[in-house]
Length: 314
Image (cartoon, rainbow, N blue to C red; front, top):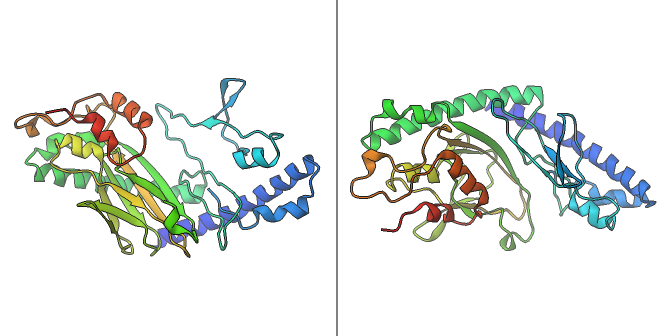
């Protein structure tokens, strides 16, 4: 657990520094607009923290340096004098990309400044994450081996599916909300990946899974990993394993933090039922990984609707 303590301490320090930079930028924006910066500074006090950019219709690559994006709220407050920046992230064919984003907005009561995207460039934090990433990948391969054996498949033959598989890490921060019953931290969905390994960083309950039409809360166990079966495993197993529909709710008084590791087969894998498991008929279509990713990014995060696109009519 020491690595988690170091990670959170690093993020806390970075969060505080990032908030100070943001407040200073807000002051400059106010002065540029001829507004009273001291009077308006309180709007971003103790706020809540959360690349190509579009310029004249063209996507312009940005070098890896500290970047400040104007958000929609600033555009609205300035009556359009400052424009929100439309941007996107692209991937590299050979190397991972690491960054960290902090989002600062007008706060709610008792809110804190925090980072909610875990893609980190800080050296000390990156070393911790690199180690965690490697171990998480090993756990995933071991779980895949157990799944294969349980399905009566040759686990050694199929181990290669996740040998050079893809991995994504994300940190989730759900701030407290006085009207928690009226908002959703994360809408109901199943993960489009193979396996998700989630650790709940603090003891605040928020994750719920759907079981027989009812939402069942999952109690955080310190140091324990929660394993979610994703849509790809359901497809590969021809429905023998079902992906888990889940959602996140928020707490009225306390923030909730979790770190999710998303794991999928390597890019050469066909996404479809494994032949040895098609006894009578395939329940899902088989498509290339590239086609599957295209389907994922164009589908709405809503229940298990991605699988509805993959299911074959019997």
